[in-house]
Amino acid sequence: MLILLLIATPLFTIFFKLFDKPGDSWQHIVNNLLFGYFQNTILILIGVAIMTFLLGVSTAWLVSNYEFPGRKYFEWLLILPLGFPGYIMAYTYVGLLDYTGPIQVFLRNTFDIQVRGSLLDIMNLPGAIFILSITLFPYVFLISRSSFVQQSKTLQEASFLLGKNRMQTFFKVALPMARPAIVAGIALASMEVLNDYGTVKYFGVNTFTTGIFRAWFSLGDASTAIYLAAILMVFVFVILYMESAQRGNRQYASSKDVQKPLIRTIPTVGKKILYTSICTIIFLVSFFVPFLQLLHWVSMTYSKVINADFWLLVYRSFVLAAVSGAVVVALSVILLYTLRLSPFRWVKNITKVATLGYAIPGAVIAVGIMIPLLSLDKWIYTTFISAKAAGLFFSGTLLALIFAYIVRFMAVGYNPVEAGFQKIGMHVNEASRLLGARSTKTLWKIDLPLIKTSLISGILLVFVDVLKELPLTLILRPFNYQTLATKAFDMATNEMIAESANAALIIILTGIIPIIFLNKLIKKREP
Image (cartoon, rainbow, N blue to C red):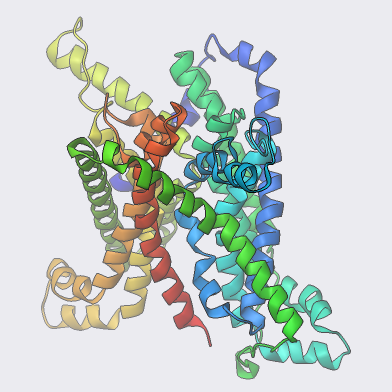
């Protein structure tokens, strides 16, 4: 209960602070900025939802149902954009399209085509939608592909016998059957959109996340930041409700006794070329071209950037991410083992609170944690030291930052550990207890060794997410403390884009590791 109460701290803080009066800046924001926050946030959500649907579902259908050159490679190549944080993709594309970028240099040197300024201005709302879509569509691709692969061939055979062609079968049978999976993928992408700060900040697009930062840092108004965070949470709950409501009580599963594995179709030569071209273009745009640009910048600047300070930055970031991952997994084990031993049904429902933090944007969590920690610091000083003194025991420290990471990424570590416990079942645990071992000894000697792969997976997934996290880290980091994410963002916003590529490249390469594991996991589940 204590762990769950701590994880729910940001929600409690925002809820109770709403009963306070709004800050001095609130009226100014309502009169001048709030409509823009609403408009831009909704437009980005709608735009990203449409683009991720088109990109994710189309590519998932192609690699699941057709045999064409490169299909096996595209199964995992199209997941790689997940390792590209949106803010890194944003300034990489700005560099690609800039006057000194490779595209304009090629046009000038080869065809003597002169373009003033950028080749294409993407530092606006449509540009933000494009960037976020090409980095987030793998959420839809992954879940949709898994759904398409596991669909029974019997259903499609019935559709063909009723006179429908493959395109009609896709729209009438396969797409409706995969609807829960597709909507879940779009919901995940939407959560990431609401959490994004780096992309919209760099492109100058005002959203609720940038509004929270402006209220907190520029205006120094914590109450106004709380009100904006509460509105942002309404968006989150609306998305979660819509994702749940669209499923309703409908059944999407086919009878197991007639389940047949899906057999891929061999298309004509022309269609093979078309399908390979579609997947290739999407992969080039969403990962390969920007990744090459980062490598080019690294080759230009590594001698100036990579020094002792840079390796210290890498060491700090990795240690912070590893400690956060280990703590998250340790707390997950405590919660899940309590769930296994508890005779009360309500414990199963209440432990789901632990996974709620992943749906909360990082800026909201940061504000919801900073305010109670500041109050706690003030109480400690006035009670035990001096009412006139001031200082920081918890807020502005690494402890506060790790606490926030635990709240934000508990679901990331919790789910693999839960899957591990479910695989081993209760019979091993019960056998150990019958032989006289206590529950603690059973956990250490039996359960943990059996789920060590799940524990490592949980730590690795949290490690990568912490390494990429930007808005939460920007608000809660100690003074003058940098991580790879904040360093890359700070350098990019200070027009040191080429130099920022060194930190960005490490983040991306690290992020690719769990993507490879994820693809292997899906391959194992394929019939």
